[in-house]
Amino acid sequence: MIHLSRYSLILLGILTMSYFLPTGFWKIFGSEEGSTMLFYSPLKKQFVYRDYLGSHQFHYRDEEGNNYSRAAFEELLPFLYYKTMEKKGLLPLIIDGQSFDKASIKKGRQGIEIKSRHLPDHYPQIPLYPLFNQDQEQAMLPFPEDVFRFSGRGMEFINADFNRIDEELSKRFTHALMMKGFSFPATVIGGKTTNLKPFDAGYFIRDSEGAVFHVQRVKNEPKIIRTPIPPETDIEALVISENQRKEFYGLAITGENRVYLISYDHYKLIELSADQYDAQSMDFKLLISPLHRTVTCFDDRQVFGTVTDGAYSPMKSYQRSLPETITPAADFIGRMLFPFQLTLTSEFRGQADPRLHWNGWRALIGIGLSIVGYLVYVRGIKKRKKRSWPAICLLLLAGVYGLICLAVLPDNT
Amino acid sequence: MIYSIFYKEWIKARYFFLALVCLNTAVCLKIWVDIRQQLQAEHAEMIWYQAIHIQSFFYSDIRYFPLLSGICLAVVQFVPEILQKRLRLSLHLPVDRERLLAIFLALGLGLYTVLALLDTAAIWAVSRYYFPVEVAVSSLTTLLPWHYAGFVGYLGMSLILLEPAWSRRVFVFLVFSGFISLLFSGSGYCRLNPALPWLMLLAPLFFLTVFQGGSRFQQGEVT
Image (cartoon, rainbow over all chains, first blue to last red; front, side):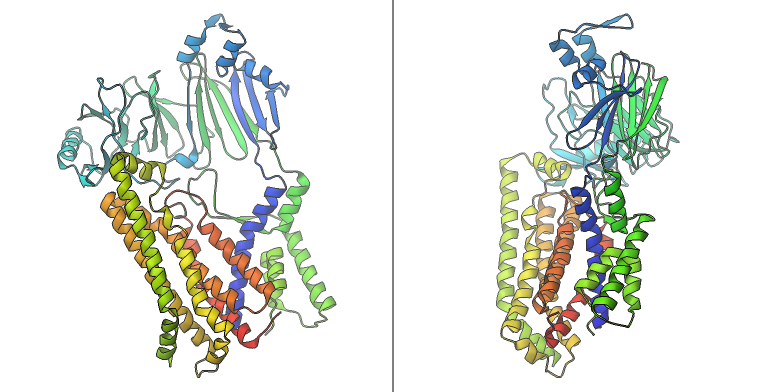
């Protein structure tokens, strides 16, 4: 029992140290992750990027590696920094023979970003949603007094004042959905739950047979449209973003990591050029300017960009690795010292994501040094002749973590 | 004999336990009064929106009370035993050391479980009364790591009090407090759900660690 108790404490010590020691090490020796923001410059006709190197250090460069000052970099992206252009008196702009003033730039801009950690199943979400009432006579978009949910039998509205199901409203919406052929329950629900938006476009809801329905509440009555989106499109996420341009409702992401715009033109799907996109581990960004659309997706190693024309036909692609912010010496020492690392978080998840990272062959050096250190201590200083095989096994498995445990918790039995 | 030891422990802890029941009940009452007042003062749908989509849950006041309760129970059980050397006498009873310690821990953890169930039932009842069932269910898995922190806190404090050597005490403190800090990391509801099964698997190890402390206490080892 005493051995079991001791090894329990050793195991807990190893697990706790494997979380905190590497975390502390990387915090001290430059773990601040580098990042790259990739844009397409309509003036240079090439990609330009801003590298963040940590410690408030930035590089502004183009594809050819030319350096720019921040001000010069912003001038390469006049649609993005049009307010700066205006302050400098550089508007209207003439690009490719077309003139762009402030109003036309403003009208032709849109941005939408999908962070992996905000996708369904990547963060804890209570499946209750407010369905805003669309009423042209209302200047504001007031919050509805109820939230809706989908069950296997229908769409249910729960009134917040009484915490009770509004049977009448639920019946009306369920009936309207059934009339359009909705097969309960819903499998994917997409909509913007805030009223901080220019107008409400309702929700896009995928039923159990794959059909996508556009569900709105107009003057407290259901307005349901069965979209022509093919049910066989394996949609796993629907991200809706209301914008005054009214070109598309939002994005649909499939299980094969294809990304489509859901257009206002009869819900036509427009595929975006993002072959490298992986919804599990990448963030996605679509930037629309009056001349181009730029799709970028990035994980913790690389960033990929594709620029398209106004009709979403790809024109040019570019990719680059994210800048290294850790010095090779710190990287080597860190990997050598800590054989493995436990992590609980990931920038691509909005909830815990427990993982065990093995630090590769360099960890073997640290393990070897730990064994040598232990033998020197035991045989040289403590003058013990007997080898302790369990201790050596522990060091083989846990390296420096095991060494610390053996130093603090010697076997005194 | 076992019943007698159990009864002795209960006699020792009962008033402190009742005080902890009162404290936890008071916190739950405060949570209830606060949310009731909020729902009267503001639009209910906005409170729901904050709870569901902004993830500012109304029961966050209880966050550290399970840990506090666990630590207090360990202090109440073991400090008098150690300061007045009563544990040494108990160790001479015709019950083996591990069994004796297991009885101590069983009573402490049993009392802690009653407190945890009391808090959980109160939060569930308030959630269920004012919010849809989905919110009430999410409160259970949000509370679980905090209750687990109380469990680990109880065992950690017990081990620190039993352990005679300062170097080991510091090590135990760092390991247990490090683990507990993970249970409180992040914000928002159900954040630790994917990791909870793994973290819960370690519970028997935390329980087992105390027995070496008991052995070292009996032997009076200081290295």
